[in-house]
Structure formats: structure tokens, C-alpha cells
Image (cartoon, rainbow, N blue to C red; front, side, top):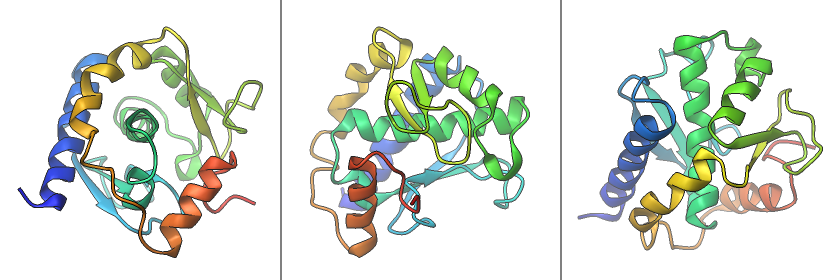
Length: 177
């Protein structure tokens, strides 16, 4: 299997797994793909202004090649919360992270935070999640980690990839000040 096919297959399997374990299988079928530059973000799920009905989630390949599987899966699940909200809730303007987004994230074991850590604001434009100890996400991650091992173990390529990793590691999403 080609590396791109292997990555897409692993991401699709993870999407399907998280849909069943975290979203009770309610999310619509969705194509998960990778891109090297996505407006300096780590991923996105199409919404009202992004040209789609939530049928695609695009992830930043450079980020996924540079972080442990659990961190990468957090981004995928974060985007899945956007897809859930688009189909079953009331998304904020420009896919902002509103109170409904925060509540759904918390219910599946990810704490939204403007700082990426404890005490950050739970809503707003730039939100990074952290894992809630003992939550649903933390309990289900080990079951899918094996499919990510080796698939995303190459170093990031390109300046935008390095920027994504640097910003994430410093607690800010790419494109944030």
C-alpha cells in the first residue's frame, strides 16, 4: 500500500471508530483527507461558509507526522465535533467554538481551552483541546493508536508544517498571534 493510501486508510478507520465510540454512530459518512496547508490550521470540517455539508474533514499532514498519535487523534475528534454540530446543533459564526461546541467536546472527553491547558476560556475562535483524564476519549484512544503507529512517523515537510508544529507546541494554533 502506498504511504498516502495507508495514511488515508488509518485516518478513515479512526474516524469510523470515533464515530461509533464517541458519537454513537450518528455522524454522516465523511471523507478524511490530508493537506499540507489549510489556512494555517491543523484541520477543518466543512461548514456553512466552507462549502459543504460536513462530508469532508481535511487534516494538516505536517502536524500528523510530527506528534504522537493521541495528539493527532485529538485534532481529528475536534473536527468531528464541528461536523456533529453542523448536522445536529447550531454552529457559531465561521465555525467559532461556542458553548454548544464546548459542551459536546466535554461530553466526549476533550476540554476546549483558549490556552490549550487548564483554566483557558472554553469558547472563542482559537481553541485547543486537552484530554480530560478518565473521559471517553482517553479510554478509547488506545484501541486505535496501533493503526497510527508507523503511518505518521515521518518528519514534517515544508515551512508551513514546521510552523504548525511550532505553534501547537507553544500553546497556540497556527495563525494565532
